[in-house]
Image (cartoon, rainbow over all chains, first blue to last red; front, side, top):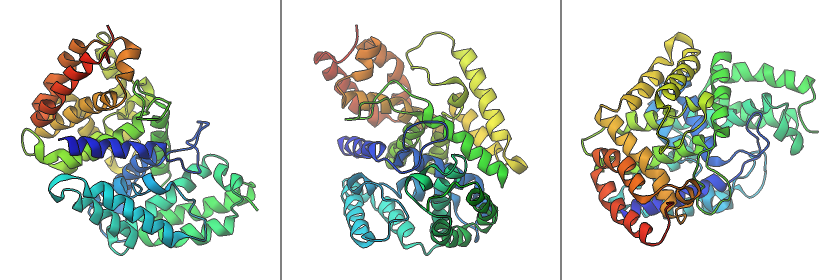
Length: 192
Length: 192
C-alpha cells in the first residue's frame, strides 16, 4: 500500500505546476492538476461530438494522466517553438518513473495512455488533444485574452497552432471557436 | 455548443473552492477541482483493492463530479457536526442547475453519478467514498497533521469519522492507515 500512497503524493506535485492562463474571475494562474480535471469533464460532456466515435472512458483517463510528466519539467506554453523534443523526452522519463513505481505493473496502463495522447493517432487521442487545446482558449475568450495579451500571442498564431488539432478531433468545437476568435481579435484581446 | 462552453466555465468556479488541507510542500489550501483530479487517479490505481469488484470508469467519473455542488456552497470540513442536511440540499440544487443546463439531457448521467456517490449504496459509491475520505488524511500524514492541528481535530474523531467508510470501501487502505494514524497521534500531529 505504501507504493500507492507514494504515487498519489508524487501526483500532488502537479498542483504546483502553473500554466499561463488564469481561471475566470480568480487572480492566480491555473495549475495542471485542476486543468486536467476540467478537460476530463469537458471531454465527457462533448464526446458525442468527436470526429470519430470514441471510448469516453479512455479519453477521460488519458486526460487525467496527460500532464503528469510536467511534475519534472513544468508547463510550457503551446506557442513555444523550440525545445519540444527535449521536453517531451524529459516528460517521458518522468512518467516512466512515476507510473513505473506502482506495484505489479499497474502503472503500465497509465503509461500507455500517456504515450497514446502524445502520439495522437487514435480517435481517442485526437479528441483528447482537441479538448486540451481548446480549453485555455475558451478561458481566454472568457478572460479578455489574458494569457494571449500577457505573452504577446497574435490571433493568427493561435489559429495556426490550435485550429488544426481542434478541427481534427472535434469539428463542431472548432466551428464554434473560429468566429469567437475572430471577434476577440476585433476586440483587441490578442498580443501583437 | 454555447451550452457546453457555459457548462465548462461554470465548472471553472470549483477551482476557487478551497478545502482545509494544503498540498504537500505548498503554502496554500487545496481546491476542490485539483482534489477531484487526484482522488480519481488514486481510485484508478487502487480499484483492484476495492471491497467488492467495481467498474473503475464509473468510479473515476463519479469522483470527478462528486464535489461540483460546492460551486454554490463551498467546502465543509468532514468533521463539522451540524447542518449537513441543508448543505446537501443546496449542493443538490447546484448540481441540478449545472448539469441540467447541458443539452439533450446529457447532464443526467452526471447527476445520477452525483446522487449515487451521496447515497453511498453501490460498490462503486462505497469505494469512491473510501478514497475521498482517505485522501485528506494521507495529505495530513505527509504534512505533520496540518489541517488536524489547524482545526483542533483529535485522533479519535478522525478514526471515528473516516475509519468506517474507508474500511467499508477499501479494507486494505484502512489496514494501512489505522497504524499510521496511531503513529501520528504519538507524534502530536492532532488537535485536542
